[in-house]
Image 1 (cartoon, rainbow, N blue to C red):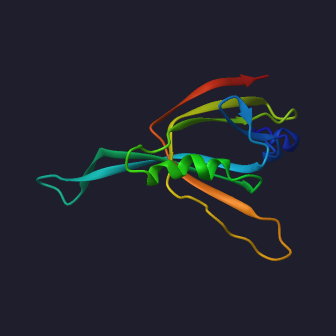
Image 2: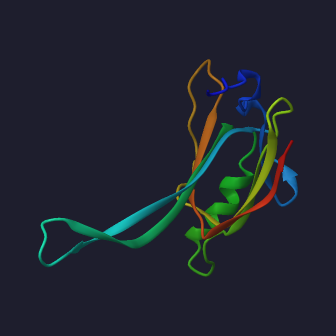
Length: 146
């Protein structure tokens, strides 16, 4: 017999944090990082069924939040200077709901932002900013369970 899920143990995203260079970026209230795995189609003799071979892997994500400063835009804008390369950094994503079964921190390595949010606003609204990125690798720093 299956034991029903304890709904109080579901993870609340309100306890998520984005860190960069040891600083908690409190203005960012949404983050995601994902790995897209693709497969190459392999045609096989003697059957109509195709096989699959692991192909390219793409890692990407987005951080979203409120615009507080232009500091990140200034850093990422170095890509526009032909004498400099892209701005590369690391992010730490943390999720620690005190009621959930555990907490985790993940280091996102080789982060390069794919868009510069220069300016946008709407009269009467809080300005939000979105920063999509690609990255090279990740590692679990902590995964604590009760």
